[in-house]
Image 1 (tube, rainbow, N blue to C red):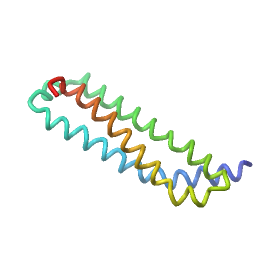
Image 2: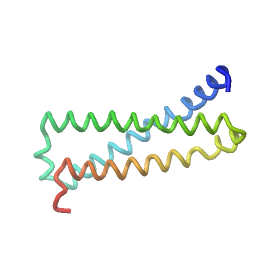
Image 3: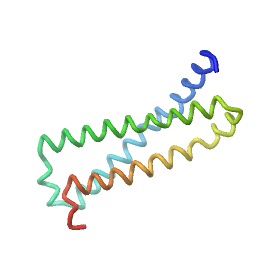
Length: 117
């Protein structure tokens, strides 16, 4: 793979993944908001600066993890399966959102006092 191909593959990957990052973040934020509401009034105790900073840290880490999709994307684009990959990479997106959603649920339960569940 030469530099020109890498640039083309990376550009294509960014065009695909970055608009979907918004959906990814909205799904994770909805899970956090849902569990915050479901665990009310116990979750009210979590309204502290340190907890807010911790949630911010987790959000940043979730976005770093989102970048992991670039690795298989660019690799698959550089293969002979580029056309097939581009039609089906949405499956990787759905699996990644589901995986991140499960992790987010567990963290939301831990942060907002879901010990009783």
